[in-house]
Length: 113
Length: 116
Image (tube, rainbow over all chains, first blue to last red):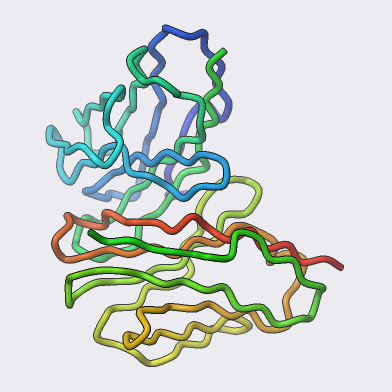
C-alpha cells in the first residue's frame, strides 16, 4: 500500500537528549514536510524539502534539524536546543507542484520528561 | 502575511443535525488555494477538498458541501445530516503562490463532536 509511515507512534525521551523521528514515503513524491501540532492549535511548519539534498526552514525551525539524502526519507531530529519539544509531530508529502494536496502520516507523539 | 482563522474551537451537535464549520483567511496574493482536512482520533490528517481562488462555485460531495466567498474571504464547510463518525478535528488551510510547493498555513482547527 502506498503511503507515509512515521515511526515510532509514541516516543519518550529525557530532557537534554536528541531524538530522531522517522518518516518514509512510497508515493514517489518530490516534496516532504514536517509539522508540529500542540493541543488546541493548528499545525506549524518546521522544515520542508522539495528535492533530495535540499531543504528549507519553516516557521519554527529552531531546535530542529533534518536531512534529505533519499527521496523516500525525511527524518527529523529534535535537539536539546528545542525548548519545549513535547508535541505531536506530523510528516507529510506532496507531488511538489504548487497547490497540490499534501498527504500525511499518522504522526509521532513525543514526550520529553 | 497569510493567516487562517477558525473561530469555532469546539462544536457539539446531535446526530442528523446539519453543522457548518467556519473558515476565514487573509492573503495578499491573488492566486491561492484553500483546503479542508479532517483529523480523526487516530491523528492522521485526511484530505477533503482543494479549491483555487478563481473558482467560486460551491461544491457538494455526498453529505459534505463547501461555500467559497472571496468577497468575505471565507471558505465554510457544511456537513448535512451529521453522523457520529464525523466526530473529528477539522482544519482549514491556505497555500499561496509566493510560498513553495504545498506549504500550508493552517487554522487552529474545530473540534466537532457528534453525539448519538
